[in-house]
Amino acid sequence: MADRVTLSDFVWLKPIGKTEFDVPIAVKVLKSAGDRIEVKDHDGNVFSTSIQNVLKPLHSTSVQGVEDMITLGELQEYTILHNLHMRYSKQLIY
Image 1 (cartoon, one colour):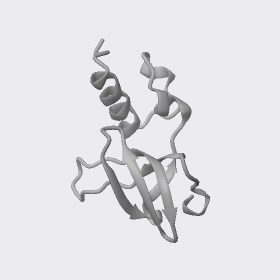
Image 2: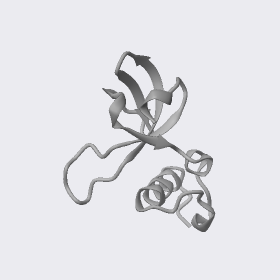
Image 3: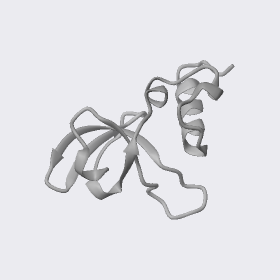
């Protein structure tokens, strides 16, 4: 996957921490230079990381978020948590 990252792509990054509770994070690629990419997460945090930390692209339902989580294109723990986080930040709790 790392060799196919382009600007404005939404991708999953490997978990930053090393505990059992850390999950991949969704980011948007802002810049690419060599083996480093600059990314922005859903909360607006911008940081640089190795392109080797890219896991895979986000499914379109994970980019936009969905009301009914059974319609998520990927049903992993981290995609569900990401969708809940997006809905919570938009005050769409129910």
